[in-house]
Image 1 (spheres, helix red, strand yellow):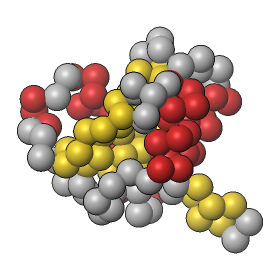
Image 2 (cartoon, rainbow, N blue to C red):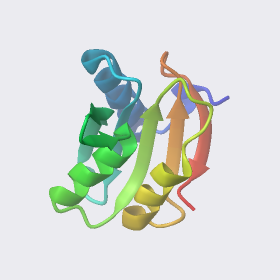
Image 3 (cartoon, rainbow, N blue to C red):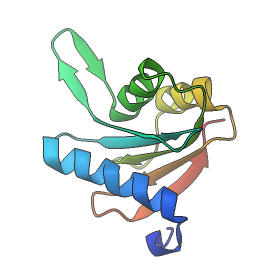
Image 4 (cartoon, rainbow, N blue to C red):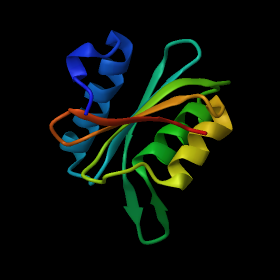
Length: 117
């Protein structure tokens, strides 16, 4: 477990944004990514009959659609115990294998820090 107060302030910010998206939209997951310029993109799970996307893949898609060229970091707030390989692949596609991915529980406590690799 990672002490969230020990996180870099910019990483703490994306965890907070992801947590807010999850709570505000009443979805299973919230996510946020930070691009190479410091801009953030926030999303929740998309669960429509014709379109299903995790929160993290939605946030990455929003970054790409907005012109991001790379990612500095990603965060997911979820009740899950791990970040799926599909989610990490989306982050890796834009940010590279070394991009950090933070997984926090619904209370915002970071339980896992991994890479997109």
